[in-house]
Amino acid sequence: MPHRLSQPKNINVLISNADWAWPQAVAQIFQPRRINALVADSVSDMVRLVTYNKMHLAILDSHPDDLSGMQVLKIIRQHDQLLPCILLAARPSQQLLAQALALNAFSVLDKPVDLTLLAEQVDRLFLKYYDINGN
View 1 (cartoon, rainbow, N blue to C red):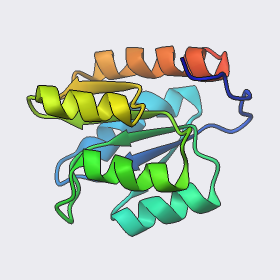
View 2: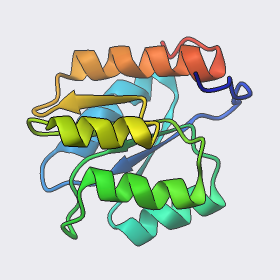
View 3: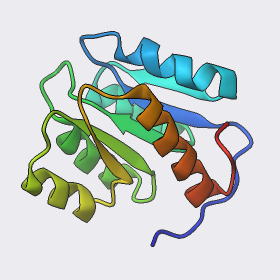
């Protein structure tokens, strides 16, 4: 079980960009909660954001530069071992689930993403890691 992190004053969520309306949909979840959604268009953007900003959650999808969410998670783990991550995958295999578990992903959600389920996962994550209600 991961240890509880300190309660944040400003909540930053890193979101990987995708070729569809994904960032806009996630922003709708976070906007009423006063959570900053920071969208990264590339892996280098993600690394820069993780390195120079305090992130509280990363939501990883496939990437425009053809890296999978799992590959991005591995790169993020080189820079931040504790950042809670939610991985999105179309029909995740047992191998992918095992890798996600090994890299301490908080959860893996099947695509297409049910935004209600994503919001519930985010609420659980904030309660578990930061002892705050995401609502």
